[in-house]
Length: 281
Image 1 (cartoon, rainbow, N blue to C red):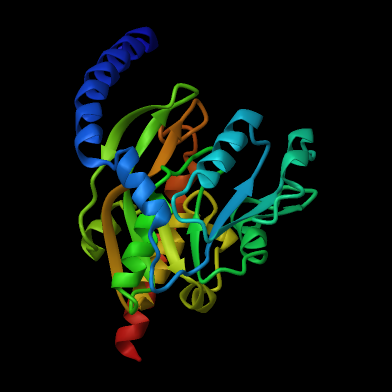
Image 2 (cartoon, rainbow, N blue to C red):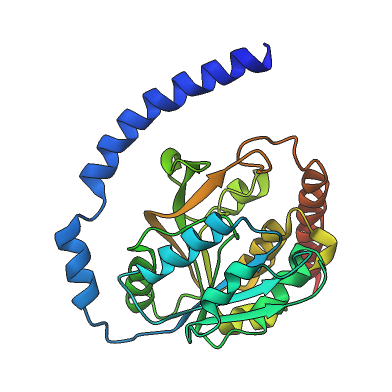
């Protein structure tokens, strides 16, 4: 099939899916009244959520939408921790320099996704860490739902949610991923957890963050290592993350980053080796 025909097919598919998914959104997601209730609600435990973002040559409009999505959150005890490995520091970042909820470091070089992310983690002071790509966004009720689950599952140290995708620049929501509860068998077949992942500070410290040798599938490796030793894993069955589709995204084209599949294979292989070692010890 030609690329032109593929585009026509995708446009037709997304338009059809958009209509049915919009009906689901209207039926299942909080309305303005519910969002206002969330803003006024007081939890018995109000943990700080550190949102970890590695930046690299991020488009201004994407960055501003990311920051705006956090400022609209109905749960307010959060911080944004950014490590910027861009070729040069962008002028639009001046807008955040006086924001006490945003911590930013310019690395001066691109150390790769894992090391850039670890630099952002080093800025964090929160109780739980959530991971957000530099061109994605969170719905305004995302952190409220996370903290609600934390309050109901104080013994849990690993949380993940459902997700969907937004078409580049249009914020048209498509392709919802309604995930199962935790299943190691499913996880070993593909990284179904992906976004939105929230890990307790102590657990992330135990696994020592991201490892650069898995760049491309660094999230997969982190999730495998975290779930191996997590005390309790909670699936939040709500769409709490919007993954942007653009020309450079694996969400749009799985051939964009072929090295990611090799890194993913190694992450699985090393997980199985660790499990064998656990069994023999």
